[in-house]
Length: 431
Ligand code: SF4
Image (cartoon, rainbow, N blue to C red):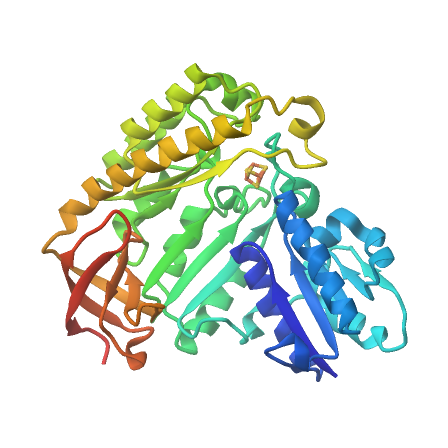
């Protein structure tokens, strides 16, 4: 039986797809690269926005027209459960029941409608997951779920409470991948700073980074996504102890006004966030900090927005992801808060911040002009150039070749922009 898995959403979903494909291949199914070749198509879904869920329903409609069998995994599976059978789906597998996928596919042949929502993560043999989308960079989910319950977010309802993987299991996975030639690793979690807080053995993200940095052949370690009040200053301290830990922290602030932060149920104040960033920068002065901001949250006044603008000016983020608020069914904000900022105003505020951040990016990028930086080559871009990242997560573009992918090179920066930097390779470090 031929199976195709299509992924929507975040890197954690990408990692779940890698695991699902490996489990299916181990069970004797053929994984095919396109849905047209497949007998069954599994959609690994995202429910973070209404639009992402709608895309899944439209995809289901198209697959039904092609008379394909359909399986649903990921966040929409958790949110909609049995309701998905009304859409003609053959099976539904929840975010923690990944290893039931082969059984679900096998049984779908008989026309059985199956739903697996239990937590069977302990049964997954992560160190044997060889099917990865990159040949040198591996995503590794280290903590599932989130306990934070931000009022606009559906994740705690679809991904459940926080559950950390044992540190030894993660390190064994890192060692197995490093033996197979992987150099870069990103530790993932919806709230990655909560890693280890649910275990009693003193495990923490800082400890994991420190231990993983000692694994032979590991070149660079990243982690995503941080939550300000769970972030420990031990992390910048271990960064200083190992060059392998990237000088890059994605620390979403979401808003600059305490009133809105409270309405979002973010458990820190503007002042605490600023103090945290200052402390991180005092430990690792060249650290790159990026953030997320939501504009147009219910009740956001001009004054609240001005506080966000002032915060962005003050913090000088290296990158800023901006999103316009839209109510997500099933969340506290959707139920209790009126979506009262006009759409045109949300767009105006968003484009104001976009322009501000562009200026900041350009100014910060000036310091790269003429410098030589070490870059791990990732891939080719549409413009024919190759690109990679330096240790501060700066995207750098240059003329390259396929055989350099996964290797470290020195690049001299010759041109800057508000986005990527452009340079020339001066030396290949890995032969
Ligand atoms: S911390 Fe992130 S994943 Fe958790 S509820 Fe808040 S926004 Fe959602």
